[in-house]
Length: 428
Image (cartoon, rainbow, N blue to C red; front, side, top):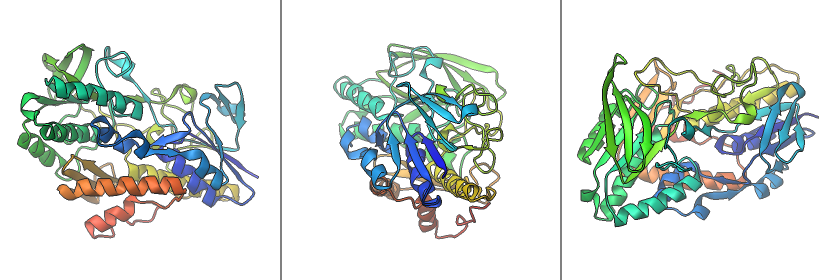
């Protein structure tokens, strides 16, 4: 019998549990260890922040579904991974041993790297977690009563830009519906070298599409920006030229700000030689397998991926939903192979498919592969994206509650594009 432990139960960890269960032998055991017994559908957090969704609408109680799938579920946070001992120490003093471990923890949010950043004692809001989104909603309600300047964006080292653009336009739509948009100047501040870079050097014409949307909605922007500090109502930034030289220093006033932070690996798995990189992300090969600890795999945002190239201000590479699903499917297959005495042979496609909702429209893009040069490099916009995002939300929440494991993004891309180029073999 083999015991597979999944550390984390977010988007990647939950579907990892379902998929690996399907790949294992009847006598094998799956255990999920997570600090939160409930999963909140993170892509809906921007809607939470403006009151378009309530917590219970996007919350999934994982234990009943895990039990139905015969998956052990331990809702206790990890204290430390002891990789040499094949053991996870928990915060309650107990330990969980494993034969194979899949790290799917997601990131730690590095608000502390910039003075005054973040919702925990800082002056900016976040949509990275449902608790943050609910706090942002309370500040948004104050903005409705006392309109003033808004700053939305992503700081240096950030690797998740889509939600920043989403929230920018969702907030703009909400302000128009409240009939106070004329009283709220909006500025997008980003570490990207240009609008629509997304950590991917653009996809299709994301630069043109997003710049056009911003101009049409009277939103100003600052690119290659580094946030120095945030005080109450004032954000201090440095703006850099393409050659990396300092262009300007500015103090921007705001009544409401949502800035996405940089990510790093969580402390229980960080600082382990051969397992994690200096930022605490888990090192994997093409099979999602750690080169040193062959019985440890990783999927999702916690995976170490080097930046695409130098930029005036540091920019990370995002891990989109399709990319994570691709990692999960490859990992489940490879662990299934190993427990049967075979070699891992599945490689994730690592394509990017994204729906960015703008409240009453949106932008969709497909990049195959995610990192250029690409075979498919496509983007489009329209009201259909908003409806597709709603449909995806309902589909995915239902899928998580039922415990099904079939991939979604690839099928969506095929329907949207009407092509079969994305249906490449997942063996690479």
